[in-house]
Length: 228
Image 1 (cartoon, one colour):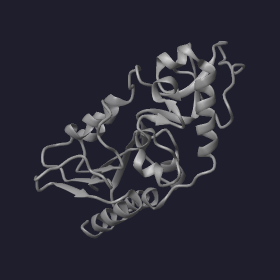
Image 2 (cartoon, one colour):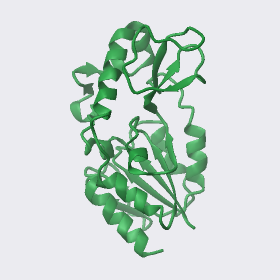
Image 3 (tube, helix red, strand yellow):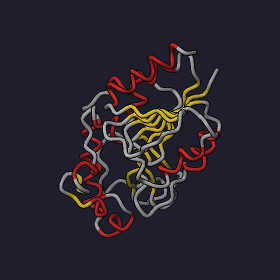
């Protein structure tokens, strides 16, 4: 069974109604992204950061996976599918995808500020009163600007063994995630699905589908299922 590695970004979640800060000129719900999504912002104003992610978490509980998410699940009928997502939502899991690696953390989890291995499933608001079992403040289980991406090595190893690579809804401008494409074996077929693709390539193995995820992903999935 061939292995497909899928790299997804904010574009696929946006079609389910989840806001993306890059579409708003660097502002996210009127917040400078560095105020609410950086380790410096956390140290400066924990209350603001907690409130911001509490709002995001509430929004996540109200949205549903879309046709792009469900199409990727259909790929598992004939392929070994591994999804590497930059998104912090769990829409891939809600749709039914079995192998999902979150590069930037997960919104429906909280973790200890003292011990990053203490991670808890978390659907409600995080408040200043919420502590881990060691008595330390809980924070969103999110990789912020200024922090290491702990799952990056695992993601690179997954990509190195891909037979086919799908890139969906990402500008490929945020590093280190943007570098993952370079770990794919030489001449691996790559399908880049984005309504505003920022990469131009004349290589025969690089296919650009200038469509939003709900249209482009089902198109590519249908083609792949027919060519097995």
